[in-house]
Amino acid sequence: MDRIVRLLDQKNNYLEKFYSLNEDELINFSQGNFDTIEGFYQMRDHLLKIIRHLDAEVEELQKIPEFQVTSEARSMVKEALAVKDEYVNRILAQDLEILACIESAKSNIIRELQEIRKAKSVMGKYKSGAATQRRLNEEV
Image (cartoon, rainbow, N blue to C red; front, top):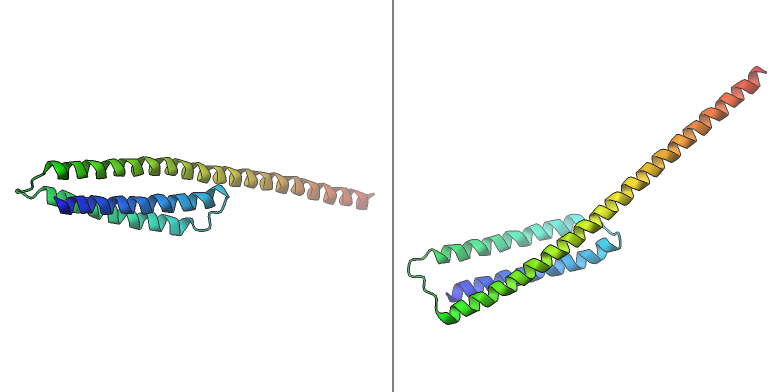
């Protein structure tokens, strides 16, 4: 049972790293800096793989027939699971903030592209109007 508690503590340690990674990157995203987004997602994916591996180890240990749980161990597991739940809730809140930052940046890019398209259209009309005016002047 001690092994399960250690694995749960390790998982919480990696969840804390995941949370800190999000927190650091959220500062960049809120400032409109998305230069490190690829590395950010790679690191998140790496941490999630480690967490999944730890979960798999816990599941395997629970399958052992002579697996017994003392009241002290049960208490330690409950505490570790409460910490995990807290990190998961915080991470979910961060992910919503990250998605909002990305959505905002996407909306700004779309708005800028529309403005550029509109400006090009106006410039095209201006240029064609000037060419028509010149042609009319030459004919007279």
